[in-house]
Length: 275
Figure 1 (cartoon, helix red, strand yellow):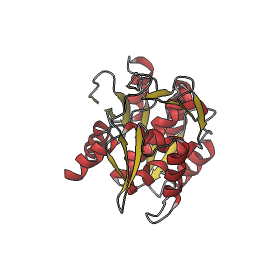
Figure 2 (figure 1 turned 180 degrees about the vertical axis):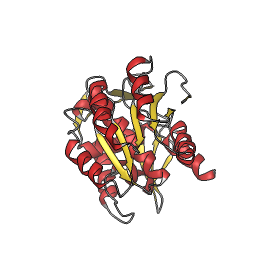
Figure 3 (figure 1 turned 60 degrees about the horizontal axis):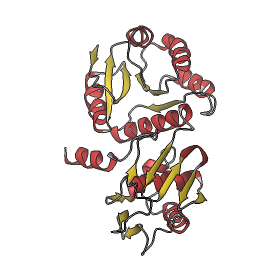
């Protein structure tokens, strides 16, 4: 077992990955701000999870011993650790069991899966989404963040702006949070589509993203003369710019209260592309 633990980063257990998967997926996890911890087999992970001092935030498993699946799922359920299973197409019985055993996210940590071959980008999206769901599940009351005069309250999908509560649809809330956390950076259409609709393949030409953006811009008043302005960059994506306006609260930006960290995602995608 190799342990790269470095303190406060989210710990992702990697079980059963071959050398290439450990190297490629481990690099992606580090760029996401996570710490990958590799185990050769399920037994090693279970021992570390139950006897070690490390809390794991996610189990990423390439399951070779299907007989270990019931024990893995029951243990992760007890420890509230979500699972991302990578299987091959021949493991039909296992995949059927995964589908029948997966709990709704309101009842416990989720179980997600992908079938080999799976590209690194999909691994990134699935891991990010699993961490986000579990964080919201574990700490629904703690998820709030402040950006100037805009306070995001996660469990209610509400943004409070200058004392007024603005209720957003779940996807609008996630989009707004991504924009505010990455203020000053251009967010490409493909990245936003993949981040907000990871469970479906939304085509680039689809207008679903543009409609969502338009609703966020209107509801949060992200236009000229306000503190934040949402700009469309033709053919590329969207950028939220912080205008030179002093917030009335004087509080600046505070984002340390429980939302899964996403502010570095465009930069790590760019780093991966350059590599």
